[in-house]
Amino acid sequence: MANYNIYFSPTGGTKKVADILVGNLEGEYKEIDLCRDIEPLKLSKDDICLVSVPSYGGRVPGIALDRIKKIIGDGARAVMNCVYGNREWEDTLTELQDTLESIGFTCVAAVAAVAEHSIFRQFAAGRPDEDDGVQLAGFVAQIQAKLDSGEGNMCQLEGNHGTYKEYNGTPFKPEGDERCTGCGLCAAECPVGAIDTENPSSNEKEKCISCMRCISICPQHARDFDADYMRELGDKKAAVLGGHKENYLFI
Ligand SMILES: Cc1cc2nc3c(=O)[nH]c(=O)nc-3n(C[C@H](O)[C@H](O)[C@H](O)COP(=O)(O)O)c2cc1C
Ligand code: SF4
Ligand code: SF4
Image (cartoon, rainbow, N blue to C red):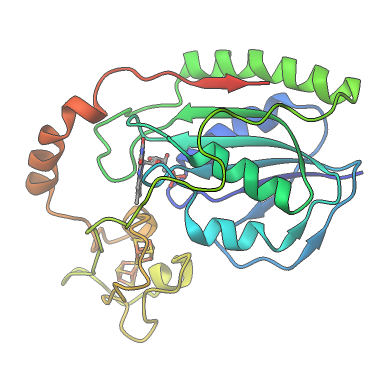
């Protein structure tokens, strides 16, 4: 029997929620980071996985799905975790459930939790916070009891199964400016290989998924968007992205 903490978390918010969940589950969880390509993995029915993804436009990021599909579930049980940035998560969990079940997982529980918005960082800033931690830990106790009892599948989540909300990406494609020292960190860490190692100020815009990882890791802050422009744009989105949004728990 083995346990896995499987996550796609370009800027760390999804991982924060995953770590709260895993930290309250029993046993050791090996990490599988979907920001990098993974080796094919065959599981068995005694294995347990926490599978965590951010919501991008109400969907699972395509590259995360591609990498998840390298795993054969073979009856392993999955707890699903979708992390959203204070707008909505729409079809993210149903798409994740459909995918995991199609590769042989049994989904036993799901969470849709709030984390700081990775593009407009002023929204849900500081989430998950202490209250989130207490709520999520309480829910993990229920999940652990279900895992221990050997109870089977959760119901299909409500919402769209098979066809999902259209998502065509965002116009945010970060490039390096004159502060770039050419260290190459962003090129090495880009989940989709959109940055040329020889010319790391670049961005291959067709490949870029606007995940903001290069912005968050650049030691020189050479890929930041213009702060005033982002603040102005954020102000226009406040009605949709503002306020205190809830975590949703399904078992
Ligand atoms: C390209 C992109 C699209 C996003 N779309 C949504 C969305 O539809 N709804 C939402 O609430 N948050 C959205 N967010 C915010 C992220 O879901 C949220 O910040 C998440 O915590 C990011 O995960 P990470 O910190 O692990 O990278 C989006 C973020 C990015 C980068
Ligand atoms: S991480 Fe920053 S400094 Fe390093 S290559 Fe990328 S943009 Fe340049
Ligand atoms: S270039 Fe695009 S896909 Fe690559 S790390 Fe930066 S934002 Fe993410």
